[in-house]
Image (cartoon, rainbow, N blue to C red; front, top):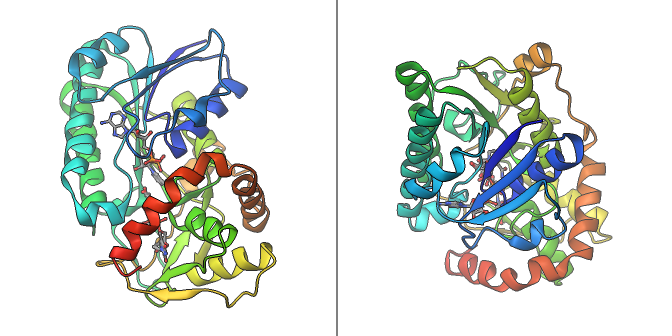
Length: 332
Ligand code: NAD
Ligand code: TDX
């Protein structure tokens, strides 16, 4: 049984990870989260008991981070500014949290000799042409497009340097797009589901041909746990999903699953610098660590996610209008 610190555990992927760990392992978990607009204590509200503790704070607070690292043997670092569209409006919080925040954690990891896992994204590899047969692997070069992905790549390089120079016991994972419960309505799938629930037409950026590879957040969680338990220190692992799907196909599927006409959506202004396609080759994770996704059927996972948003309007409702005001101002 280990003592784990999870940064950003009140966010989408972090909350799913904490639930996964508490239900599948004997670890105790401390969540450190600043509760930015993206964090919600409600996502963790059903988690009580001696194995769980929440600490409200900033990963840039070196004294607080130091005191928490003294209590644990594993740190899993999810905390980040995570939304591309917000990074195009104001990159500074991305630099502060993603770069300075990760640096603060790495310095504590160096002092306390804890096992450290850094959560990153496939977006650091840039994008692929729609007809490119290759997929991202652990050897793909970094080529980030947005302020968000550039700051994630910067944080990854810091982790690599702290492993090499200071022998920090770290691993890194780069996952493709996640979906599932507790995802903020600013993101693509929840935005469209909640639009349909509210009687508003879904909004697809550009011509909708952009491709993403979707992973259920619970499968991301099981992959991270496998890396913590069986991964090789200093190694990077890419995590990929059930396959590549065009954005317009995802929206049409959402509309169909929700009983609407599949053409009931609008094309809106494209995202500046919009990455065309992400694709992942997760062979290392599958062969070395024996990982396989549980949500292999995207349609079934999407259907369960739609049900979750239908039954949890109290969770997402208060943020919906702010998000739509943000996008309306951008012509989206
Ligand atoms: P999110 O925006 O839903 O959650 C981020 C969490 O971090 C929030 O709870 C927020 O309050 C917290 N946070 C932000 N700044 C902080 C700070 N300075 N100190 C402490 N806490 C802070 O993000 P997410 O989608 O859950 O992503 C989590 C991680 O997973 C990120 O590192 C992201 O890059 C990575 N990732 C996400 C996806 C995806 O599809 N969502 C895919 C691959 C990788
Ligand atoms: O309303 C929308 N319409 C639309 O067409 C929104 C919000 C998005 N999109 C498009 C843009 C992307 O091609 O859908 C795709 C997915 O968009 P996001 O949900 O914003 O995700 P993306 O930019 O791909 O990044 C996500 O996956 C990688 C996460 O937000 C990142 O944190 C993660 O690193």
